[in-house]
Each structure stands twice: as structure tokens, then as C-alpha cells.
Image (cartoon, rainbow, N blue to C red; front, side, top):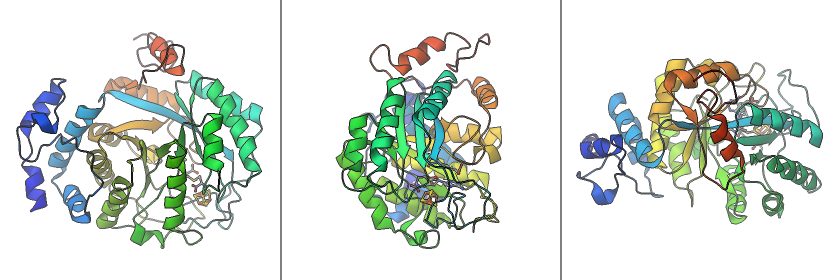
Length: 379
Ligand code: SAM
Ligand code: DTB
Ligand code: SF4
């Protein structure tokens, strides 16, 4: 019933958005408008599952219409990741190469010195990133870690980059201290559907995650929250992950959708690869459920061919991690991403802020090759 209603989508919405006009419920000509822009927090599992079950073309048509109604379809926000504290983590997340208990060959490293992080942040900015995301393999930071991370955040922010950190579960006052230091986003993923979570992680529960997300929102930080697909969950459980994200009190401003990177030594090392079209569907459904959020095509791009990535951008992905490495695993190199952007006529997202910010710099650099990547190739 629901699926049928969704298939009878509003063609006028697509025409409006293709012509660059905004198409909202107020101007919709159809009963179930394809470019439905309502921000909802009451999605049922059945509704989300019905979206997943749409014919592939119908789903992408609808997702793309929502994407155009809310975002520049040819702009992609570019973030770069750095592991500032690697390995030796006491948790047991079944996907994670940094858990101490799995023999993955990752060498534990203590918190990096400020200067090293700054060098890496400068390099990321020079390569075209507008946001610098710092990850730490902690269950959560200790009180004594917070001033050190806060100093790093302030310094990176001082370079004119947006800042994001992912440090695990936060304690009292941590979110506010990070906010005061200049942190823009905090990444904390719910990872999977509530009912599948217990098969992946045993050392902390879903409720712990929700509590940290609440602390992040309360401190006025922007939330980056998503999950991993391809861990052996069912389609209904993928729907459950997206339902849980969309029904948070606020939609996360950034929604990373990771495809499992199977790492030898982890319990999920031999997990069968998800059908790439199912990954594209996941991006598309996330796009529809959280229309104003930026959906990030996250881990797993190195295992994905260019055509699948192109489908993800069409389905509503508006952000990537750029740089040869994620935290400990590989990522496409900057040159191949650059080539992909050129082939697809994509450009790095220009966030309109005050003059003199990194985004103004990126806009200026776009005069080089036209892709804002800082290279000197001709347009
Ligand atoms: N320790 C902190 C935590 O767990 O929140 C922060 C770092 S943790 C590595 C950040 C996220 O990376 C995880 O929540 C998970 O979604 C993602 N991740 C880790 N290993 C992955 C893998 N093998 N494939 C895909 N995503 C992965
Ligand atoms: C997110 O959702 N994905 C990123 C970021 N947030 C921190 C991490 C991906 C990690 C992939 C495995 C690794 O490189 O260790
Ligand atoms: Fe530790 Fe985070 Fe990896 Fe879990 S995902 S093992 S908490 S680093």
C-alpha cells in the first residue's frame, strides 16, 4: 500500500527541480510528492522498508528529486580524516581494525603531537579539504585527554578548516569543552539497527550512544552520525538503521554511510560483500528520510568502482572523505578522486561564510582547474 503510494510520485516536482525551482509541499501537484521536503521524525519501519523495496529506478528518481530540492546536485563536501590516536582500543566492535583484541596488524600509537596534526591538516587544506576530521581509538576520552584534544581542535580551526572529532563516548562537560575550543562537528555513529547492534558490539550499548549524541546536541555541536552496511544485516535491518537516524530528535547534519571494509583479523573479515546496488539504495533512502542532511559516501569507496560512486552521487550523496587513508585502511588517492570529479562535473562544496574563511579560499582556488582542488591543471 505504502509502496504503491510512493510510486505514484509527482512528476511536476522533478520538472520544477530540474529547472532549478524549489518544489515544496506547498507547490506540489501530486498527492505523494516525490520531492517531499517535510522533515519528519516519525518514520515507521514499514515506510522505510517500502522505500527500500521500490523498483531501483523509481527509488533513485525520487531520491534525486529530494536531493535537487535541498542541495546543489553537483557539489560535494570534501573532508579529510586523520587518526590522532591509533589502535589499542578496549572495545570489541566486530568491524574494527583498531580493537586491541583482534590481530589486525594495526600498530598502537599514542595521541599525536599538536605539530604533527597541524602539518597533516595544512596538507589536507592544500589538497582541497574544507573539513578536517580527527579520530581516536578510545572507548571515550579521559578527562585528562580533553585539554590536549581541545588544543588540537583550536589550532586546526585556526587554519580556517571546519573541525570534526570522533573520540567515542563522551563524559560530563566534554562536549562543551570541545565546542568552546572551536569544534564544529562530533561524529558518533549508531552503526546499525538497534536489534542487530548486539551481534556486532558487546562492550557498550545503544543507549550509551544515544546519550553521547544528546550531549553533543545539548552543547550546540553539529552531529555527524551514521552507520555501516554490509555487516550481514538484512534489508529490514538496514531500514532500521536509517529509521533510527531519521527519528533522532534532530536529523544529524552529516550522515556518513560506511560500507564495511572487511579487515583480516576482525570477526567480519570474511563477510560477504554487499551488492553495490543495495549500497546505492541505502544512500537513496537516507537521502529521502533526512532531506536537509548531507549524506556522506564514507568508508568502502576503494572497493567501489567509479560507476557505483556516480550512482551514489545521483542518489543523494553530497560528501566524501578524500585522502589516501581513512583512519587505518585505504581510500582512493586524491588524483583519482580529482579525475572522477572532472568526469562527473562535480565540484567541492562551497559553504557561504564570511570572507577570508577556508570556503572563500576554495572558491578562489576553483579558478585553477575549476574543481577547487588546488591543482594547476587547465579547466
Ligand atoms: N572510537 C570511536 C568510536 O567508536 O566512536 C571513534 C573511532 S571509530 C573507528 C569511528 C567509526 O568508524 C565507527 O563508528 C564505524 O562506523 C567506522 N568504522 C570503523 N571500522 C570500520 C570498517 N572496518 N568499515 C567501515 N566503517 C568502519
Ligand atoms: C565514519 O563514519 N567513517 C569514518 C569516520 N566516521 C571516522 C571512519 C571509517 C573507518 C574505516 C576503517 C579504518 O580506516 O580504520
Ligand atoms: Fe574502539 Fe571505536 Fe574501533 Fe569500537 S569503533 S573498537 S570504540 S576504535
